[in-house]
Length: 217
Image (cartoon, rainbow, N blue to C red; front, side, top):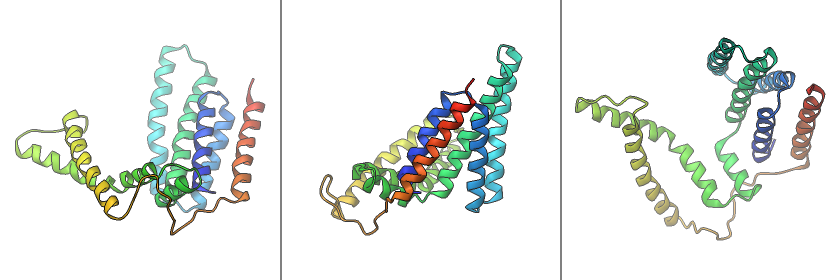
């Protein structure tokens, strides 16, 4: 499926699931997302973590609500499955979508301004550098006898300052390579948006609507 339509489908379904309480649709979405990840040969280790982490949080949430005793079993089941829907669908999207291809699609198909599209791509590609900067800041603090934990605001404040410096450097590099905001651009690779993509998008949405309609009390 076209990456832009894939992202739009993910957001729309997530919004609908957030405002409805049909656990059977949640289970169907979990099964479909898991099946799509298996078809795309996602590593079992990643599937394990995608299952374990939401299982911990969903179990904790349900357990805390059960202690209060004012939530029905139906509502608890909806909350439990809803968390897996978010994680599995998010995993399906992030693990099966090429960031560069998504950026090109957002720019060409969704008409997203180039500065936002390339800003998204720059932020994604800077993730390893950000992780290295976090490690450097923590190491520098340890040399001063100070421990910066992952929840320390000072750690992220320093990393944000470094990222602001990188953004200026990236903007200068793009300008030096001839990037002009708002100017007509050509593309070395074009992302097709064909009728099959629209049929898959519309068909998926219709199936979710039918499931929600049938499952509503």
